[in-house]
Length: 239
Picture 1 (tube, rainbow, N blue to C red):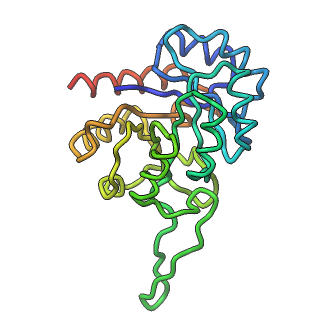
Picture 2 (cartoon, helix red, strand yellow):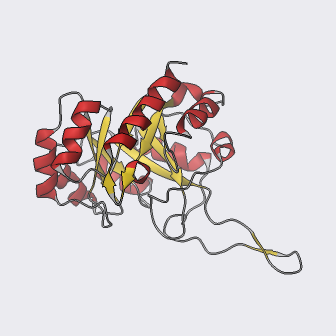
């Protein structure tokens, strides 16, 4: 069971990751509190231990920019966490040969009861702007996406909500690509999520989990929390 620790920003973060050796180290290029600039990523990527794959997280950035920064940073994987569609993927694939992981946000705007029992559906926000369908996943795969990351939708942003999504929403989709699961995972909850997904219809494509804010204290990666999370995943994977 693979582990991705996302939102690394400092040399201390990388030194910690090198000791614990997860499968992926995520660097966020998109604006937000986890954002790191290209020069920082270049420095941190150079210090990353062999065998840990570097992942660059982008949100609705121009394909040419993603391609250029990925090359300059020496990334191993590109993660797209915005509203990038199949047309976008095709443009990017013409520019890069790196594996592309596409984040899919589940559990977005839902029906909200109004007084009297009627319901209204709020307008989707930036983190839940498009209904997820099996056809969408097929189109993204055909365009060149090589894996998915299923995360929690939010009207306030594109990720890092700290909230989980209903795993039944994943069961309702046809998934034919390797995928990771994110969203509200902690050392205390990740084993249960792993068991539930492994018991579902997509078990053979389920490759791992992704965490960021849940392994932080006061906005910084916490070695105790990261260690506990990785140990919980490995223990669950071992049965």
